[in-house]
Each structure stands twice: as C-alpha cells, then as structure tokens.
Amino acid sequence: MSDTGRRLQTGKGPVILRPERLDDEALLFRLFRSWMLEDLDRMPIDDATKENLLRFQFAAQRAGYRTTFPAASFDIIERDGEPVGRLIVDPGNAREPTCLVDFVLLPETRNARLGRAIIAAVLAEQGALGRTVRVKVLHHNLPSQRMCAALGFVEIGQEPPFIQLEWTAPPAGQPQATE
Image (cartoon, rainbow, N blue to C red; front, side):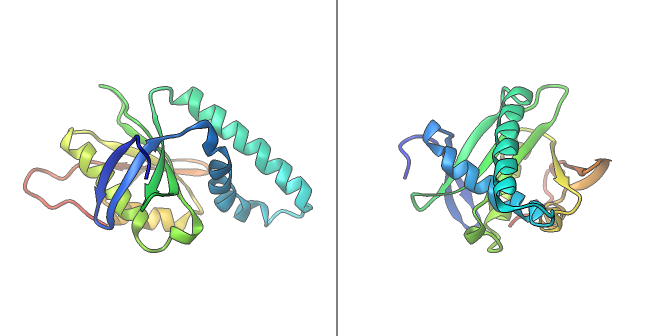
C-alpha cells in the first residue's frame, strides 16, 4: 500500500486515493488503452496506426485535463496495495459544482460494483459538503450511464458526444443511493 494518499471507505471495502506520480505513466496508458481501444477497434486501420493514435490521444487527454482542471486531484486508486484505477475530481468553486473529470478501473476489476462503491463514497463526501456533482459520460458508454443513474445522477444536457449528468445530495433524512 502507498505511504501517501487518503483512505476512502467504500461499500466494497477501503481504497487508497494517492496522487499520480511520474512512474504511473504505464498504468495510466494501460487504463486509457483499456477503454479507448474498443472505439479504435471499429476503425479499419492497422495495429501500428491504432497504437500511434492511442499514444497521441493519451498525451492530448493528459495535457488537456491538466490545463482545463488545474485545481483537480489526479489520483491513482489502490486496493489491497495494488493500483486498480484512476480518479480525477475537480472541486469546483462557489459558482461551479464539483466535477468527476475521469474515472476508470482496470478491466479485471470492472463489473463487480467496485466502481459504483467508489463513486458512491465520493458522492457521500461531496454531499456532506453541500456540493453538487457533475460528470460527462460518452453517449455510448451504457455501463457508466447505468451506474450514474443508480447513484442518483440525472441528465441535464448533451454536449455530443457526451451526456451531461448532475447529482445533488438528497435532503437531510433521506437515504442516499449506495453501491
């Protein structure tokens, strides 16, 4: 387990959120590749071209996130001492809600509701602060849309190719959706 970072208690047990480090680049590329390759596999291009496109898009995404969300926390998710994903959360400000910028788990950790448990714990923290949370989900990412709906997000708009979703903490005394 990492020496730095913060413990996040989830319905699936604790995880550690620790800041990204330079030596995380291979993990970050693996995470990016794990979901982006599905889109590229539909394109009639050779593997070398796909790999070059992935590298280019990965670099562009990283630079774009750092520029667009300078106040965000860029964290690696660790479970049982092993990295299992990435979470980027921008805290927003008095006028702008908290934003879930990026969230991805390694393929072998998906579909066990760990992702839902992590986001539910983040929402609980934000709700305790009285914060609204927004996220953009690709229109074809049905698993993420289902997870967000189960956690209480509602659609507030579309910015193709994304659907904009928003979560507001339930009023005091009402239960919050969990994992």
